[in-house]
Image (cartoon, rainbow, N blue to C red):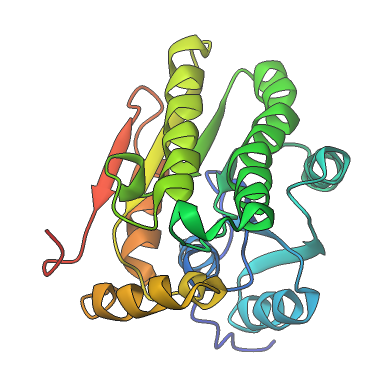
Length: 253
């Protein structure tokens, strides 16, 4: 008989099967770690499979349950296959955390049309693909939880954020519409983070936006702050739906 040294709890009948998109870094990685530490079964999805493999191995080494797969949220068939494969393996899917997103900020007159298209593809279409993939299973199960990671950019616009804020307002609106339309048993939550320590700002190519972001990010909170908010929403009783949580660092007003 061996003695376990795991730091994560054993899976229990109340453990949920959760698919996390954009799980290779930042909020997605922190969410996977936190939910796994709480005994949930995690499926990690992102394009960088080397990082996913390292993260899932770490979770399993700590006694948690995690698997991973390459996932491109802009590909509807790929997202549908990820969800269907999760159900085939575990018998169900209880929640999806729609976290994948990009933020190449720039003024509109920089005319970075390719970057606009990329934000729309990932931040809006990627969310819709996740919703379309899980809803049939949630309706069949009579239960499920959709969590969308939006942004405070869904509620405000600053110079350089016009397109990004538009995509995050769209994410907020789509998720709110889903909440209003959903059948009993299906819960819907929007998490709107302020400035978070992540790689999002690394995607900014416009030099003016880079300079502004360096100042803006002086007050940033750890990604686990958002993971805790997601955990709180998922952990509520079945008859409680946390509609939206806005989380900012104290230094961001």
